[in-house]
Figure (cartoon, rainbow, N blue to C red):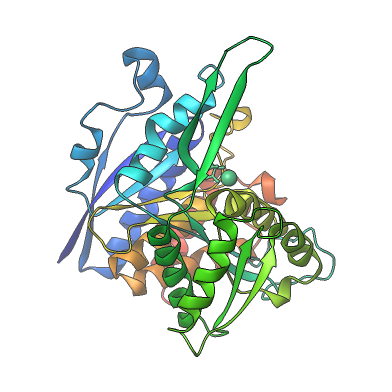
Length: 357
Ligand code: IPM
Ligand code: MG
């Protein structure tokens, strides 16, 4: 029996609803496999915890998470807590504290989900965005002086290091190499930003030498948005800075039909620490408690988690089940259906139990 210890942090808004759905699906996958077990431990950290204690997670939060094999994360954000507190109090300290420097965001059109792009079908859009997840525009360097005065200044400094850029570039080239097209697009803004971004371009060219079988090209981030919309078939694996990839991955999710299906993995490729898996969508207060949150992103990120743990068979089975259920039209309202979170979850569990999955 292979046992994996998973830390669940459902946190805010629809987070608990989708993490509950994901946990159910994981336990059915384990039953089906017979030789795998997921031992889930839930942590009540997040905005409610903040309102009670003044912190989003306890001071020794990272220590508590260290012994786990992976972290399954819901969403953070609450209407009455400033966003920079929820973000810098929980999700970013985990990503940065565990040096989860590779943020991996696959996008494809799931059967049954319609892309807003005319004529773009399943298979036409099949991308993985690799987001640098430890530095860049999210380094947290900056400050404000003369607060509230007419001469107030605010700085927000992006930090790009050779170590940081080289390791994410290597990760992206390796990932591109593992995909059938062996094709990577490196995104920067090196026409306007002459230092860090030019360094990105140079390091890309250096790392490319290590991967002679990977074809690669370069795009400026503004032109990239046009290419994603006009010529989605021309892209495969994409690497970009923390902020650029943040923006591009929202666009990617929208082009694939809904942010409700988009997953993300925060990976420590060196496996010194647990990696963290989450849906891209936020806490969505507008639909919290209504039972209609789309659990597909949380299932898809569970499949990324299974891949990371080496449970490829379960990972593939889960995605086949999700695709089958979506193709049958069992969809939540955000992707044009009328099903509830529970109905989609039940259908996916049923499909996993089925013989031919
Ligand atoms: C994401 C989100 C976060 C980010 C927000 C919640 C700050 O948009 O995971 O893409 O920008 O990192
Ligand atoms: Mg984002």
